Amino acid sequence: MEMHIVSKRKDLTLDEAVKTHDGLAVLGFFIEPTDETKSSGGSEHHETGTTGSSSSEMDTWKKLTHYLSSITNISSKAEVTEEISIDDLLGSVNRNVFYRYNGSLTTPHCNEAVVWTVFKESVKVDKNLMMMFPAQAGYQKVFRPTQPLHSRKIYSSSSASGAKTSIIVLLLSPCLGALLYNP
Image 1: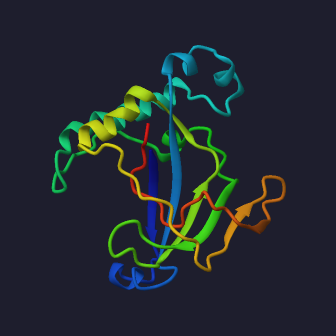
Image 2: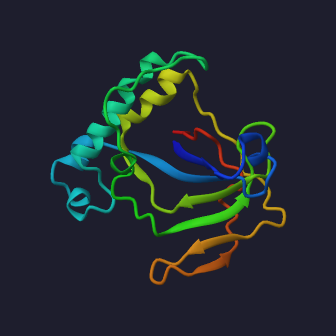
């Protein structure tokens, strides 16, 4: 699965932003399933703090998934009454290591208007909570195939210095899907 955090340039309207090569910025986080009992019971992964999920992080995902049953179609609205922190949803993901490139929106008309930042580390979420998203939304195996790079350059942060170096990443799609889960 994948989570996108989308921001629009404050000096542009939305209509202007989708027509501007850097009108939008998207932070993309891949989400991988984990077994909550293994990640919260003092396992090796939990102790390292780098790949496991703490029970407080899972509590935040439980809060979020609680609202999914209220969202039955595209016009549904859910009143979120509990505080849900993006920091808690992201957990211990290292936000200093990422790929960055200019690309497009993932929905038609796929406007070339996005500066993408895709983080290298994935968010770990209990498999049962993760499966609630496609189950509640009615979407199964929704993904967009890898798109050609064309003349795009993909940059990668360096974990040691934070400097960016150009790399070719053929497996990373320049136009990632809005919801990616393929068991």
